Image 1 (tube, rainbow, N blue to C red):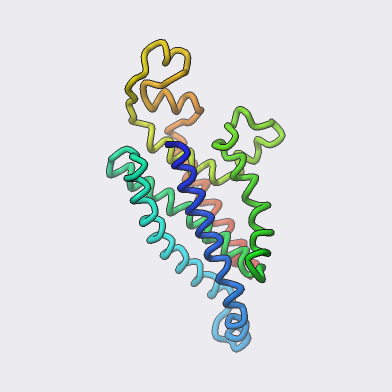
Image 2 (image 1 turned 90 degrees about the horizontal axis):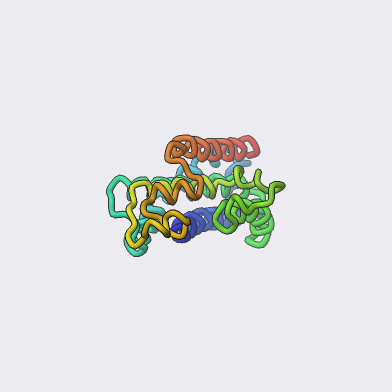
Length: 219
C-alpha cells in the first residue's frame, strides 16, 4: 500500500515535469518571434503556461488517481478519496512549476534530464520510502526534510491509515512490532503524526510559490 502511494506521487510529478519541460524547446522559435514583436511579455507567457499546465494536470491527476485508488484497494471513503486526489494534484502542480522554471533553459530532452535528475533523485532517494528516515545517514537527513516527496507521501499514508483496522494480528505480534492491529499503531511506528497534515500542505504550498516566483523572476 505504501509503495503504491509513493509510486503514484512519483509518476504524477515526473510525468508532469518532463511532459511540460519538453514543450519549451518546440516553442522557442515562436516565443522569441512573438516576444520581440511585442505581443506579450515573458512573465505573462510564463503565468499563462503555468495556469494551463495546472488545469490540464488537475484533469490528468484525477483520471490517474481514480483507477489506482480502486485497483489498489485503498480505503473506500469519500473524504479520503478526495484528499488523495488533492495531494496527487498538488504534487503535479509542483512538477508544473518546476517545468516552467527549468524548461526555458533546455534545448532538448537530454539537457532536461541533465538538469532535472541531479536535482530530484536525492530528494526521491531520501524521501523516507526507499531508505527509511532512521536508516538515513545523519549527514543526509536534511535531504529528507527538503524532499517534497516526503511531505506528499506522508500525508497520503496518514490519510490512508489513520482510521484503519487490521485483522490477523494477535497481541504477541503487536507487542513485538511484527504486525499492527490498527492504522494508528502503524503511523506511530513510522513516526507520522496526524496533526502534521496542515503543516505539510503549507510546506508544499511554499514549494509551489517559491518555485513559481523563481521562474517568473528569471523569465
